[in-house]
Image (cartoon, rainbow, N blue to C red; front, top):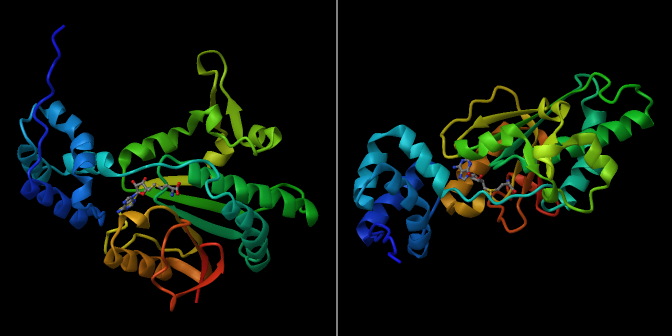
Length: 289
Ligand SMILES: C[S@@+](CC[C@H](N)C(=O)[O-])C[C@H]1O[C@@H](n2cnc3c(N)ncnc32)[C@H](O)[C@@H]1O
């Protein structure tokens, strides 16, 4: 049997550095020399698709073509995520943060949350579900009638990758992506089970989707296009890909775009560089000082 040889996927140190500099300049993502294999495997398919012979040719293409730059960033970004990842954060949101916001915001009845680096949507949907569960519970306690009782709650979900945003917007997942600890009645409240050709899949219910807006946003940008401050920002497992300079930039932007005493949720392994700006209040949860 003849084995088809794939095109020569070597990359010199010089060309690798051209890519890592470009990726850092555009997205703030820092790739060390040990990531050579990752770059080759992730960008190799783009080379093949364009019928290019080597990475230098691909670099020249990416430099001159903004759409291909976006495609390259889609390939480079690591998008691992899951529903209710680091579950204690959603418990804290539901049991402490939302009840407090319901008291503090009761005159305007507006809550704004941002999931920055939302990947394929599991995080913002988990946020929307946790908030909705809190509203049901609090609404029942204070006998406000309807679940919403006039509350306007929105989650903005952003990512640099257009590919993950497409998946997020569709809101369709494999059933076994839902953690087993989530009670079936809760799953039923927020998801529709697929039947026939869609058996084994679930779809986020429309009322949950309507709470969320998905947008492309690059955290490297000098300015973020928000008029209104957020009460809560989630940015988990995103800054691990950044260097200290970029982390400081992102944290100062979060500080700027958080409301007075707003909450910032970081990933479990992320370092807070802005202790003077943020006060720790829970496991990798901070409040704006
Ligand atoms: C590992 S996922 C984390 C998803 C989710 N927050 C979680 O904790 O499960 C990291 C996400 O950050 C996004 N990302 C990386 N660099 C970014 C940047 N400069 N601007 C916006 N998003 C970025 C990636 O595309 C990816 O979807």
